[in-house]
Amino acid sequence: MTNRDSLKIAVASGKGGTGKTTVATALALSLAEDTSKPILFLDCDVEAPNAHLFLKPQFREEKPVEILIPEVNEELCTYCGKCAEVCQFQAIAVLSQRVLVFPQLCHGCGSCTMICPTNAIHETPKTIGVLQKGTAGEIEFARGVMDIGEPMAVPIIRQLKKWVAPLKPKITIVDSPPGTSCPVVESIRGSDFLLLVTEPTPFGLHDLKLAYQVAKELQIPAGVVINRENGVYEELDEFCAQVNLPVLMRIPFQRVIAEGIAKGENLLNILPEMSEDFQNTMDVIKTLVKKGK
Amino acid sequence: MKIAITTTAPQLQAQLDPRFGRCAYLLVVDSETMEFQAYPNPAINAPGGAGIKMAKFVSDLKPDAVISGDFGPNAAEALRSANLAMYLFGESQSVQDVIERFKTGKLTRF
Image (cartoon, rainbow over all chains, first blue to last red; front, side, top):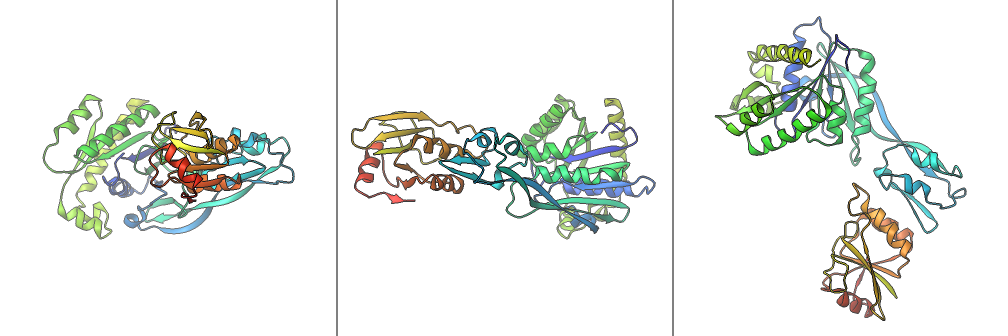
């Protein structure tokens, strides 16, 4: 997203449970106080979306997510095996005069259908999740929800991003899934800035290093939020300094925050004075994005 | 009979490999002469669907039975549709042992 008057910030972490959604929702709410700039919140953690717990949106629109799965007409099939050879995911197999399709391994790329010399394959849609759109106060809210038992998050995230593109928001906040695998890459791809939420533990630092590698690979400028800070954890600050990763915010470890979050309150409800910290962080992010361009 | 067995090394003395899709080697053994062919698993580094890839590989070798520690649901479906008999090696300790138990009908059919 290189559009100059729009800004897309993705919140990621590597390690799960560091406070991505806490930070992402608080950032969105602090920015929504200035109603002149429309904000879009995207919950891309389609395997376990939870930002709605804190922003409490009203959903008004829904759209199923479908991918195209091959269906084989065995009357036309010559069992040549070309479809199985071209499939990178073993989603289709030809074994002694039988063709097997494994829909849960299929990425819906369509290669098998294209390569079939006898046109024995056609594609049929299969629903793997749903997209939902609505508003939470001044915030436009959208999310994807993967159906239970489905293994593939990427097509849902991709379709979610496409679905909301016409909204043309000034600011987009993306709540990404944990980890550093394909769904994370798809969520943060195209962002102008990556906000990495971590915790001062060896596990948090280990995964921050991985998440930082992803940011570097995708060439997205990044900064760190240290959540649940409780005393000094030197290794974490040392790493950030070493790779030039600015620490933009430190959220102290406080029982009152944990209690509030457990009740489904958002961070700004619990500590309203933090709104200013988030707005200041946003100003720093804008400067860093400008510098990066 | 031609028996396919998953092992950790390409020898008759090798330890059995309890995994089917991610086994290190496949030994195809003649149960009468104990002559064998060893194949490295072509699916060992597959990001996904290793069981299916291995099932396809095994079925092309046309053994009379496939013996492993267990079979995943996708691998089992593929092997079943290729009409291959699957057995679990259970407590067997060696390839020799597996063949012996197979011949005497002591292996559990999967």
